[in-house]
Each structure stands twice: as structure tokens, then as C-alpha cells.
Figure 1: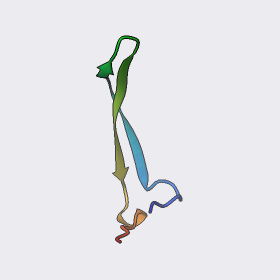
Figure 2: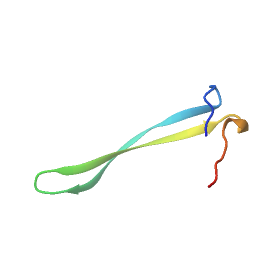
Figure 3: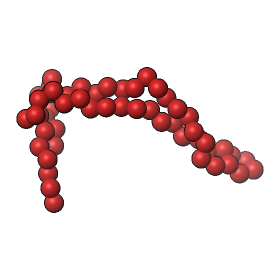
Figure 4: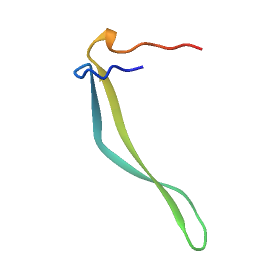
Length: 52
């Protein structure tokens, strides 16, 4: 669970984007996009671990 009060986390989107090949047939080519991202946690009390 994450807090919604603001200022506890920062989402950093990477500047690198990759395009990859999955497969192809006679009519189509399947590609995918990939980008890096990181959640930065500024305060320990901003999240709670839930276990089953």
C-alpha cells in the first residue's frame, strides 16, 4: 500500500527506450517497447508491506 499524501515517492522515468522484435509471419511483424522506471522512496513510513 502506498500513501497518497504526496512527497513520499518520486517516479523516475528512464531516458532510454528500446524497441524489440517478438515474431513475424507473412502479413505482420510483432514488436514491443521497453522503458526503464524507478520508484524512489523518501520516507520509510510511506509504505506498508502486506503478506498473505
